[in-house]
Length: 327
Image (cartoon, rainbow, N blue to C red; front, top):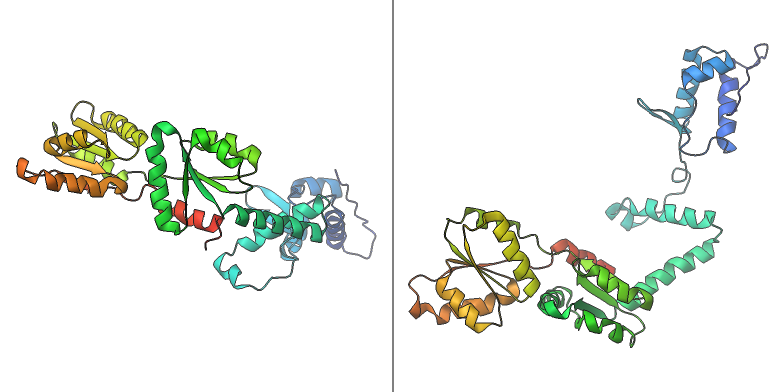
């Protein structure tokens, strides 16, 4: 604990003596940034000064930008890293006001670890260059038993990113990565752990994407009359399976649920003839529409077709564009 001493017979006012001693303790890192200073009561007891005098000194330190007062918590030494750093003028600061602080904080940590500014610059540039190299080849992966999920991802990514995207079964991912020096593997969070386990030793990036939450479709399912026959169509067997579980958890036995992959023409025809409502992913929508059109002469009332939003949420697409250097 830092000890402060006040000389009563000094020509220097007691408050100034205390101010200078606290300032020295902060400047010499006896009180490092973020450190909580003694309470006014503690300092008053230690120095023999009135608490109002100690409070006045703390207010002076706060006005000088040395400390911050947190109501109900105490007085803390301010981290002046950002305040003492010259402002960098860049249009990016207006668009991303927190970006400068993040860069500064990262750079400060590297310097404290012993890196020179030149070394820190090299580290930043090396990481950026590596990420850009990885973006030259984009792979989508999913396990063979649900390769349809990968097909949906590929379709949406190619349309959104306007770049070639290769689909690789998870079981073949290691072999494919052995033949490439860099790349980016994209998959849904369902399969991220397996993909990372394979890709990490290869120094290949793995980026997960978030899938659509189907909130609008769930609301519709809640409102369907009891006894309704509901169809679910997708390229992905996993999506179909999860959808069936969710629907059952929402409605129990209230609804008759039919599911199929879009490639199963027999099941799809049966669904079109029986279902009141069909929910389809975007990748399957055109084929479901064609099946309904082909069966119009055989059915009294065609089913209502609801095509879901994109399988990948827009935020994930936007983030992926930035990660790949496409924006």
